[in-house]
Image (cartoon, rainbow, N blue to C red; front, top):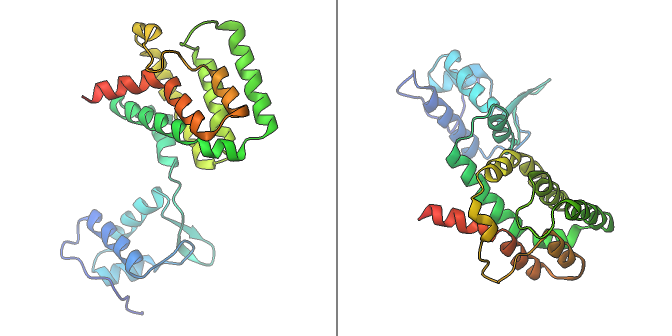
Length: 239
């Protein structure tokens, strides 16, 4: 049995979290990359001086978060973790508390103000036509209001994430669905009378027109205005 290098035996044989950390150190110190094979359970157990049961539990943790997986003829290999998957599981089981929902919503505000360059670089004629349809449907039902239905909010902003042509952003938008509901359900009655810093509210139609003829800089500023009541609320809550 070959002896593994750059890995030190543990003093405490019962702490799986220490084994997990030592395994991560081994991966880094040996400069292992995605697709590289890793030693077998028995090799790790002998190098660290622990039982295979402890090694197996530590490896199971890494497998659960997508760091390793088993391959035919290769054994265990390092894989690229799915950075959105754990969020998806938490949402699926309704395991997000109010503070986490607020944090994710703040992230949404940042993303939507920051995706302007992607939208202008990647949007297509078909995308604009889709947005036109979404906005027209909204305008039939909601006139002279800055408070849109949950359905129309999701349709318009969801289309923007789709237009980014960024897979992670698109999947993140799916995570935002319960956040949209949370924010919509907790909308303050005073929101309809919000005093915008620019004096007027930027509608979905305004944002669409900027996508048609404007610039990323104008879109960023307009999106900030569009989201200003939400931004002011979260900043006020942070004080």
